[in-house]
Amino acid sequence: MDRMEAIQAANLFAWGTNAMDIRRIVASDTVMLRNAVLPPGLPPDRSIYPGDDARDTLHLGVFLDTTLVAVATLCREPLPDNNITTSWRLRGMAALPECRGRGFGRQLVERCLRYAVDQEGTLVWCTSRISTVPFYRALGFREYGDAFSLPQYSDALYVHMQHPLP
Ligand SMILES: CC(C)(COP(=O)(O)OP(=O)(O)OC[C@H]1O[C@@H](n2cnc3c(N)ncnc32)[C@H](O)[C@@H]1OP(=O)(O)O)[C@@H](O)C(=O)NCCC(=O)NCCS
Image: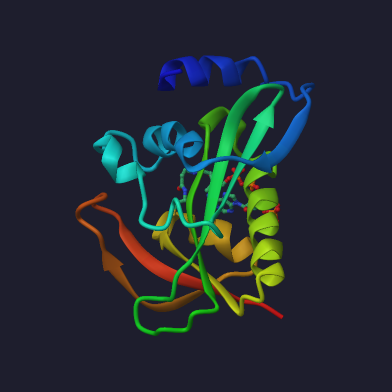
């Protein structure tokens, strides 16, 4: 399914009467949505991350009926400025535009936080564009360090955000 087909399929779900399911998926299932959303137009190999195939990496997908409409990935990885091995990195958060604002992102993040706790993690962190800081703040993350750029991805400014675990 290409991006347009995915968006057209998602339009079928606009009124929210479909069965929703969140389940574990494999790394290759995430690529189409990552590629379409994060940010669109990058070469496909930019949508494959180190750690995607690690045994303890978690990939989750939200399905409306049989259509994958949102994804998230959690992998064991320290923040760039430390080597705390109980840190987990949340990345590849992507929801089809037509399916945003319906709580799917929140449910994915909450499931990832629970998984990190189950793995005896002490911290979940992510790299957020400045524009998505309010989303992560709503889920309990806080900014960590100064803003920086990632020109290989986009012209946006980014910041690390972290969420300590109990
Ligand atoms: C970021 C993204 C995954 C959020 O998914 P979503 O399903 O729309 O988010 P939710 O509906 O679960 O929102 C969760 C909470 O964040 C808040 N939120 C979401 N987007 C927000 C925004 N742009 N500004 C402020 N708050 C926002 C919601 O109000 C909600 O808060 P509440 O539960 O307290 O009411 C989705 O917008 C997306 O795919 N964006 C493009 C890709 C992207 O930017 N990914 C992050 C890369 S850094």
